[in-house]
Image (cartoon, rainbow, N blue to C red; front, side, top):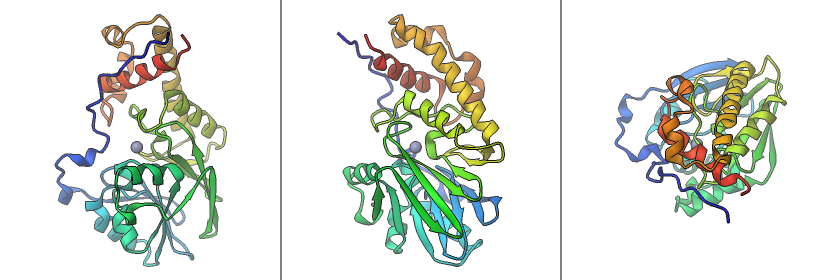
Length: 289
Ligand SMILES: [Zn+2]
């Protein structure tokens, strides 16, 4: 019979917006990635912004209290209409502004499972994507072919990676936490093995000049993604044998098997204790026993 480990991290809050937040002190900063393509940071997931002759294409929208600041930052780049807001996945730190944008008449686009999960959460009609897709979708605008590709089970079951064709820029959503431990939302359909697969697949689709907007953390390139992949693969090679031995999560934590990474990677969204709880449990439960 298959033993199932239950992670002791259930109380962990997915939507960081649930705690009191001093929104007034948050600034939206804009980083130019290449001609007419920008990354913006505030609180929550990194935004991607394409401007051009066909209007603004926005990736993700952080939290509702930040919508006015985000729109102001976009207006400094372009006064054209915002044509689409694309959600890389369903989490509230990437979709919290949907309702405000939907009420402005901006078309929200995302994978089918973003619609499903936001709808299941009881989101307002205006917060739901008006266009969804099941595998791949291409936007032909601003002189580019903006290609989106869905992965079934990685950070969540609703993840898309966006390729700005012709610009050699991609937005990876939360399949990439640059310079910190990633969050795998297992109840949200994510999986550790699926996350490894997305990163490997993406490394095969880009070159040394590709610039990468991660879901969280600074702008980077293929070298930065390779480091992330190497760390994740090393963690996998450390934890999988422990799971094969049948060790409990508490026994694994006693060993502190990831201590060499905790200092550099454990200060972000995932602290070391929560990270190992989620990942070890997912690896353990994925083994054939
Ligand atoms: Zn996320």
